Length: 154
Image 1: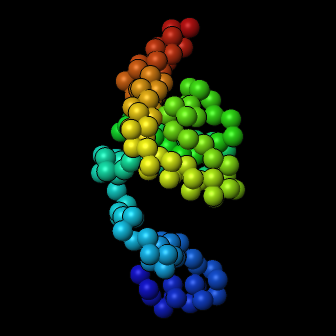
Image 2: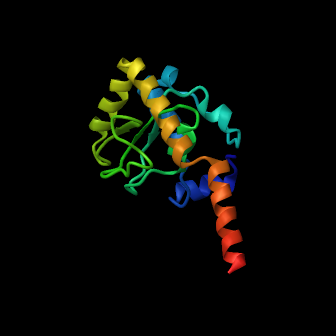
């Protein structure tokens, strides 16, 4: 909401409206037809079912939860991880990595998957298989339950 308080805070540099700034930049660059923004939702199917790729641009040098969520919907990721672990992400197999401060590299990876939809789809399938192997809720819940049961018996 653009209340007087919000406007004042923004003017003083204490508040930033990132969503607005991103949307304005996209309009300025005439990229609107390539982006669609959704309101907050917890419906993962709604989030990932219409995506071709997930760009996870964290500077933390680690895959985040959205990478695994997307994988469960056969969506490959492009992320900034210098040394991915094979149990979470395999560069060139389940998605692509880029150097976190090199946005040209990121753009090249996006265009590569855009220009190669068969490879993108294959990476999505591979991401799904890896996620289902290592991050299956039922399997992992049973492992935790067995650990608790074993701990209680001793």
